[in-house]
Amino acid sequence: MSQLAQRTESVMPFYAVEMFKQAAALSAQGRDIISLGIGEPDFTAPAQVVETLNRAADAGLSGYTSPAGLPLLRETIAHHYEERYSASVDPSRIIVTAGASGALLLAAMALVNPGDEVLLPDPSYPANQNFIIAAGGLPKLVPTPASQRFHLSAEDVRRNWGPRTRGVLIASPSNPTGTTIARDDLRALITEVRARGGFIIMDEIYLGLYYEETPSSALTLDDDILIINSFSKYFHMTGWRLGWMIAPTWMIPALDKLASNLCICAPSLAQHAAITCFEPEVMAIFEKRRLSFKQRRDYLLPELERLDLRVPVKPDGAFYIYLDISQYSRDSDDFAQRLLHGPGIATVPGRDFGPAHAATSLRLSYATRLDRLEEAVERLGRWLPEERLVGAGDVSA
Image (cartoon, rainbow, N blue to C red; front, side):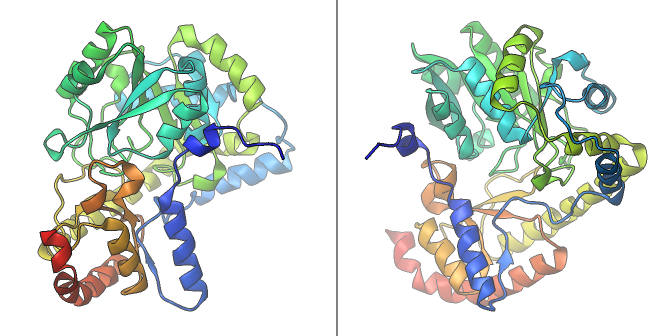
């Protein structure tokens, strides 16, 4: 019998998906499960975007586009960066991809040689490691504490950069923590990486979902950073599989060649529809929804603290809260299972995001209706007092 490639053993499992499957099975049995697990907005594409898709389909605009995407969509994205983030971007530097995943795959294939090491923070989005592995690289997780808002620092780069290190893959706002990296800290990190001739891949797919002040793209600090973004989160188009990357000019020919071979193009009908996302009346819808996410966050944070579910760092973006459950357990896998099968609340245990904080951390997604979040808090309030007694031995271990 033929054997699978060795990389299939190296690819990390995605426990959030496994929890989703269990929650779906319980729902199918008639259980009322509140999903605080999968990071998928409960909003969908606005009607205007769907109407544009239908018109494009009726007009027969479903054929291949260029590998880099529709020129008008690229121009529109470039204008968005100028208008919203004060970042000047030539449309020729934008490549439209099959989701942020497609962009990350192209980035890894273009920058990572077999055996190259890439630094990532621990905690971080688990699939990021697998894109590096797919390119033959070696992801190196660097434990990052709450005092650093769970982000890589310049000092982390100095301490962990080795002879095989080629670059860093970071995200702001981050999944699972919902925290951003401070601008001065990011500037210092960029300086350290550049001093070593390394690359920086910056995941900004949650940049639009920011709640404290006007967000800032890393492009305003360094024009040579490779930016990843997506229509899935802020634009609520998860299943449309559409994203983009902004790359330095010197990378574009290689990325275009890779895209034409590995992807041909991103879904063409989704590209036509996505242009409508940037129309003023549609952007107003997205902004109203962004404030709904902020309302949910602002409701949950004090309620969770009241229940002794500590939030080490206040999230200022995305739609995640990274909880410290050490008052109740030091086994987040077991705790997440009891939470699912007891009060019927689906979450994601910490091991999905790296080992450093895995045992006592849990990720909650507040990408669900406020009334369901209120129900989740009520269930937690009934369940947790008994759980503290049951799990007391875990905490003292």
